[in-house]
Length: 113
Image (tube, rainbow, N blue to C red):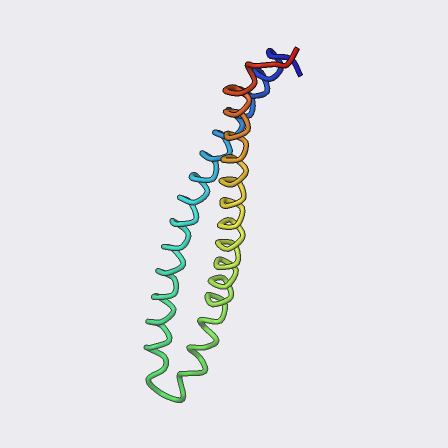
């Protein structure tokens, strides 16, 4: 690999790495927002269950009314776990890519002839 191709690879790897790292941070920000929405939904479900749980007659109705919300909360938690894992993979790949690009730029200048 010649000096020019190492330099081109290094710059490309740095750019791709930076894009991956920024994407990771954007995803993590959205995940944090989603976690807040899930926490709010869990509070609302807890309040509804508390209102219906005062009597043994209304407890069953409260459980049925909140079953759909509980299902959606569970799906939301699964989605948060997926995107957290994706963000971590992108961050790791971005750091590796940036390191490889930087290495090529710094050490790619000397070539054995």
